[in-house]
Length: 150
Image 1 (cartoon, rainbow, N blue to C red):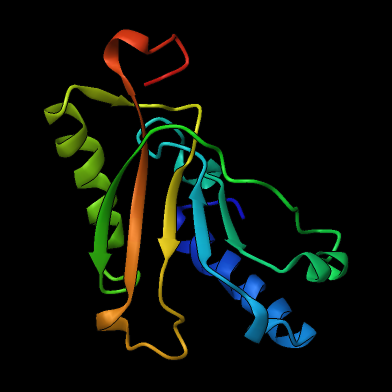
Image 2 (tube, rainbow, N blue to C red):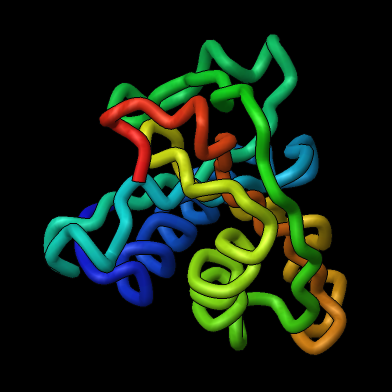
C-alpha cells in the first residue's frame, strides 16, 4: 500500500487479514512482518510504501492472490528493539531508533533495505497493551556506507 504509514499500514494489514480469513488460511499463518520501504523524512508521506507480510506454509503459496507478492526478507545487519503495545506508539519507537539510537552507536541507517516490524503476537488472541513488535532498523557501519545508504 502507498500513503502515510499510519494509513497504508492499516490498509495493508486489513487487506491481508481479509484474504487470510476468506481463504481459511488464518489458522496457518506464522509470524507477521511489516516492511516500511521508504524513509518518511525523505519521501513525501503520500509516496511512502508499506508491505504487510506473513509466513505461509509452502503448500499455501499456490493460493496467493495475483495482487500479492511472495518475497524473502532482505538480509544484513539490523538493530532490534522490542516495542510493547501493538501499533500504539510504534511510530515513536521507530523514530527514536532512527534519530537517537543509530547515531549513538556509530552506525547509519541503510536506506537500501526496509525497516522491518516483526509482529510476535496474534492480534485476535493477545490484548493490544501486551502485543510485542520487534522493530528492526537496517544499519551499516559508517566506513562501509556507500552513496545509497543514509
